[in-house]
Image (cartoon, rainbow, N blue to C red; front, side, top):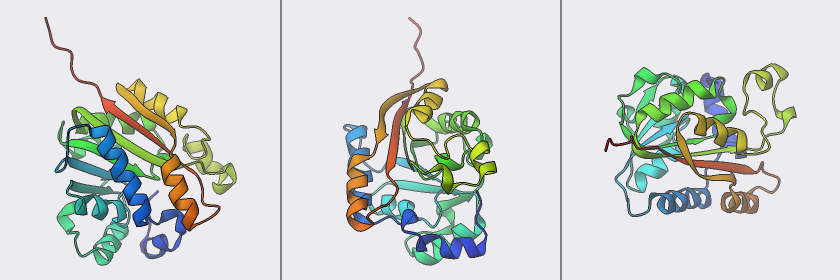
Length: 217
């Protein structure tokens, strides 16, 4: 999905799109736990960066972040909203275009509410695996959206649009060589959001690590 100027201007009005400090804290805590001894500045690609909410939060935490966003108007909105971001922090392009970045460019790939829009997860996840260094990680968060949230045509085209389990995403990542580290409801994030917006859609997360090449003996 690519937002036009009107959609970009209204995007952050929806509580489902907002990123409060409490939610940022849960992201950083999970990334720290998954990283072990590794610490920023790691190279992070924020896929579906939108208006830059997660991009700027990770940058403030010390990560070297690039935002990948298919909508030019969304990038313009991100630059207007976030003085800490610069145009060179973003790439406008599709999340499944493997040619956008060189192999092994990133240590992390993160996304918020992108999985539900993927049309060809295998193609996208294969591209993401290529962009990660060996041992690099993905942290992907989306919602358990209702089928009624989607037009029938989009629901039919986008396999993760209305999933009620993280398992299909985990299986798709495993099929392109990722090792699943965590998959299921994002309990700590859901608790934080419920305190701010009762009735908000529950989120799930899938965290995985790219395998390292086998060495010959």
